[in-house]
Image 1 (spheres, rainbow, N blue to C red):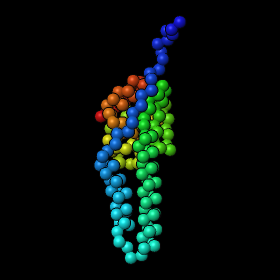
Image 2: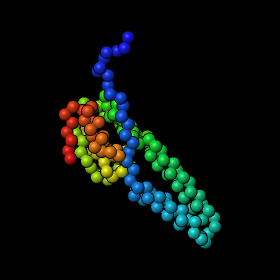
Image 3: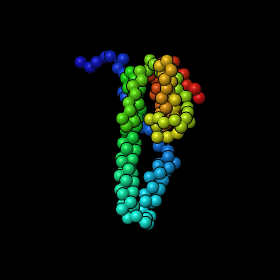
Image 4: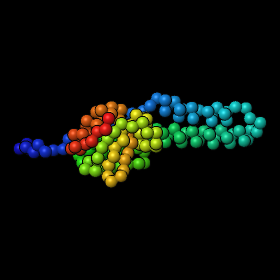
Amino acid sequence: MPSTDTSAAAPDEVFRSRVDLWLVALIAVGIGVPIVIVSGPGTDPTGALVGRAMVGVTSVLLVLFLSWLYRTTRYTLGPDALTVQSGPENWRIPYRDIKSVRRSLNPLSAPALSIRRLKILYGPDAWVLISPPDREAFIAALGKRVPGLEVER
């Protein structure tokens, strides 16, 4: 017999992080410039070889780390909490603790790959910056889960 329970929680909604192309370009330049510098002619072949190896290994590790962040940065609206994941970091914020959300251009380090962010205030004095690609859709989805959510425009 089919269930008649209509109180089932909404399915999880997952929002990936928006990615700013200027940020990608800045990172590419940051990786590329040292490679170009150490690839130039040097007077000490041994030192140049060590320098190239160090820059090469560092560049590969940086690209792998940034790729990992790109693949894992997401914001999941689950049945009872917002989960923010980015690389090794993971925050679980119960909806009952969320107080407000506002638009932000705060450049502080955050689980966001864009400067177009939302600042979510929760708990007694905590906040997190995120950057869903469609801020309005995220705010609407969050508002369905957080009764009385204060949205500061």
